[in-house]
Image (cartoon, rainbow, N blue to C red; front, side, top):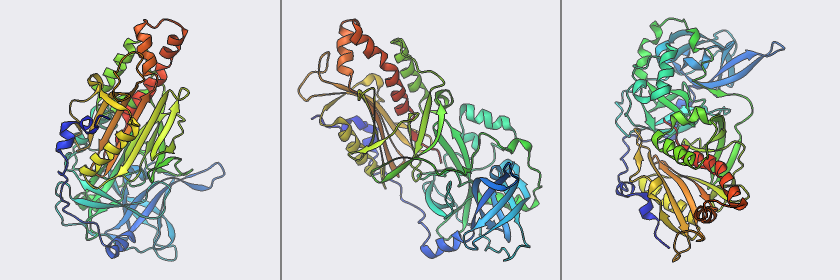
Length: 490
């Protein structure tokens, strides 16, 4: 069998061993426990038809400047009928009101009810004096969607975008700017290597001593991906002198989301010990503008169009995510994934097309390369790969935040047999990606490639060839799903 390592690309192989040294370590257990005790869940409530208050979305907050003050994200509390905060330490929930709002930085200071017994009192967190360096590691103390326990998540400071204007691109930047309330020139901190998830908005990002480096923010939906960032803790210096006015444009802003409360997120699959959850569904028209390689996606669409195969703009995909790493997998709406041999697998068109996905948590780029080799070997299933350079990157694509993506296409044939009409071959479209903390592999295998080659040799004559051609719209949906897989930003 032909070795698979060259399919990774020379740039990917050259990067093995270039893993950065961490400038920060995680807090010890005692420090983590103390910091957790200052963190609360911030709940947005509305009245139902019977006039009863109920929680509709939730975010995170933390005690700051006084025992009854809580900092959180402005977008998480705007438009709420009332705001409540819940403390695990106190085992209590209290009503809170906005006392100060730094609108342009998406921050608010809440004043918690001081009258209800037992009295509310949490230890206010302190700002860090650490100056972040690239690849230094910090901890997000957030409460992800539908989870009350404070869940620590490690992230790395990437420093590659110092403002939202530098982080957001194209249509998304235009839309955020048009909203008019968020200052896209304000300083932010860009994190990667972990994931700022829905529900983390307003969470403290702490150093190894438990002091606050930044406040987690974001929740921007960009196609299949989510975008998060940190607001430097220095921004809080101005919050006590800020006003209380919250612009109407912030309320129910569709671009931002907190952790919507309701049914727990659906578990789409559990493979290799990792849980993939469905986070939402999107139309293709809303996703195609936010891929990391728009030119590559357009090239594929135009190629299929040349054969009379097009994907409708209103076609819907499900977006699945490994919450710990932010690895994102896209599948046609309603797809059921099953674990087979450690991979998440789904079959389409009576088994003619096989979708296979894998997410592994790793600690280095070398670990990601090893995971990619395991994935490609599993996909090949003992067949021999022959690279199709027409649809393969010459070198992996490196995203601005350091995520490395390699897309390729290749034939699979029996070793020693030629690739051509009538040969028992398959055809694979594949995406490999890593952020040095996780390794993602997604592919679709076309088992009809031999039939297509034979039909092409006869100019697609006959009813059997017409059926093969008709199947290609479904194949295109899966190719687009593979193309749109990747990593959330921040």
